[in-house]
Length: 281
Image 1 (cartoon, rainbow, N blue to C red):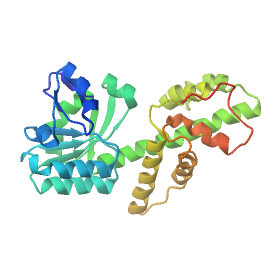
Image 2 (image 1 turned 30 degrees about the horizontal axis):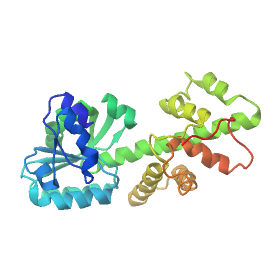
Image 3 (image 1 turned 60 degrees about the vertical axis):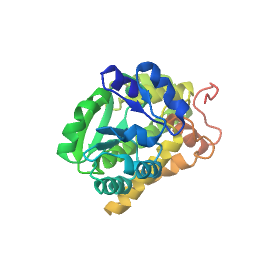
Image 4 (image 1 turned 120 degrees about the vertical axis):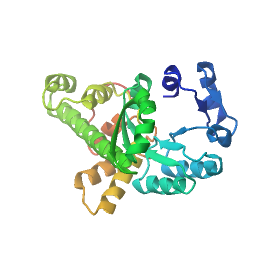
């Protein structure tokens, strides 16, 4: 994502809590800041993308004295809806705008600049940052602050549920006497076709669970979906089951690809397995 901004001609200052992770960007023209304050003090637009909401809050809180008034922070992390609102409130006190803009598309979408970007915030702030976000993918304003996180949770609900169903279909085909690979080929192009069936379905057949999106991230997202549902006063029974599926393998395979949902379904069916390939992590 940073390289795409540099390729588009934007001046970029990069900072990471572990400096060594940012240093390779220097070869592409980025200035590597030694401190957080140095990174943000002159910036009109600040983009954060971190592991979780509590980490984002810690970093924003540390940077508060250095932000210039009128700047806009775009947080592209996946956080709780409540955390996005808290970050907005923190920034508003020092005259800084905020857009929550989580993404979907994985490492492939990030490299190809084809990310789906779900933005929450004011229309005015969105219009200011839209040209920058358009370098990274397809930004869409979906509502006020925190609405971007809601849209991302909806995305992850569909992803987590679909992967679980694909895993069940693979195991059913195998156990009932059909070739899982041939089954996948047969149904592609019909109503069951999806990018997930294309990419992650093949990963399940290959038993290639090298991430990609990780089980620990999907489990965190499922937890946040259930929190959002509770706060909205609704019941999501399928999402509750999917949450259990991901948590059932979280301790054993936290860093495995999301397609390892297959391992969770196989765990529920001792002695049943898709294919003969060795598991690759």
